[in-house]
Image 1 (cartoon, rainbow, N blue to C red):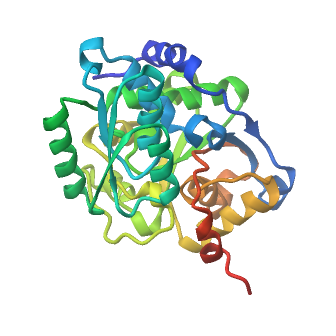
Image 2 (cartoon, rainbow, N blue to C red; image 1 turned 30 degrees about the vertical axis):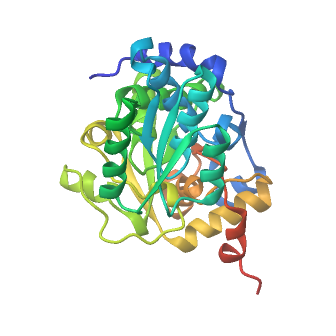
Length: 318
């Protein structure tokens, strides 16, 4: 289904009562250090601690009473799981969430905290889908995919809509890319609300499937998976790839060291808590500083659901 400008506007009105309008932060020392004029859209301050509430809430609110009567279901390693658990709690329906055993404990606990039924599975796509199909067959719950769903993509597009309302003279927006729901939504939001805006994706070298998919024109798997950006391990879908391929300027890779450096900068300079996945676009902008020097660059900080026990691993004492 083709997503229109009105679809995004209507989604924004639909979800407004359930979400925060998150702030846009700037940091003078980071700008001076990089020569880039950064504007950080802080979705780490969003309901459930991540942007995913936008798509999850929009998809849930567009379901009919008949579709909702048996609840909703999904598979997710974290933030989409929390989004649907929160949406279900708000609407007084059941949520069934399949989570891989590799999911950060902080995210599993949060999903349970919203009252959802959590089913733990092996940490691979086949196991996720098998467990989900079993749940749907047994409960009749409505499946809402984390990103391969036009209602979810439309909801995610509301983030860049807000960002452009707050900072209309942006030159560039960069988002992380995992399954591509946010990046494809940002591409469409840019197209409709500021056609000259350039949109980039940031991706870890240790989960580099989107950059390969963009080059080949078909959905590819990453050659290997090894990254602390646990929210970016999924592959694109045909739907998200089609939008990204048509509208994205490029997908930029970053190393693990660059992700950790970006994480440290945000913690030390901005004094806010973010998860590794969400600094990937910031790291990508710094790695490609010549491309963005002197430009107004929006970065969507996608979430702040951090497992605090990992800090010692990321920042070992010297």
